[in-house]
Amino acid sequence: MTMYKIYNTILDFSDYLKYDFLSLSDKPVTQTPTSISIQFHQKPESNFVWIDSRDYPGLFASGYSNDPTELWKCLNDAILSYFGVPRYEAKKRGLPYSLPLPNGQAIVQQDAQKYAGA
Image (cartoon, rainbow, N blue to C red; front, side):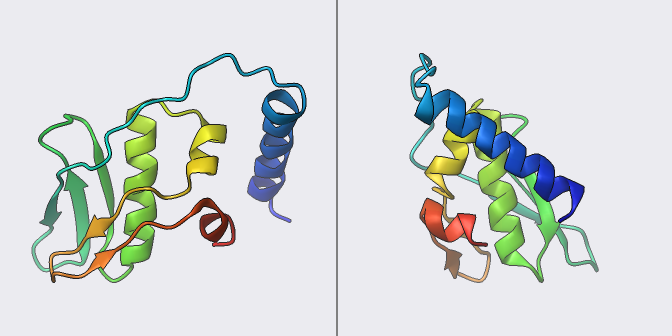
């Protein structure tokens, strides 16, 4: 196991103890918009892309156009982080936001179990 996986496992276990086993959560569920308007930008002569939103300044995600699934994961992480969704709550939500691609296709929402297995 890599250090990252060990660290992640420890955090998952800690969250489980705090929020599920001991029920220490007194914080309400963080509200986020159901959809967000995004714009794609691509660096000329490159497959590097970034996404931002005019409605939410500072919200952005970046990646490579040849790996749209990774870009989709980054977008969901950026949105949930932007709105201050705690890590434990974000993991339970999975990947709630779709990523419409410039070619007309889209990477659609996934549930938490599919994301956890990715």
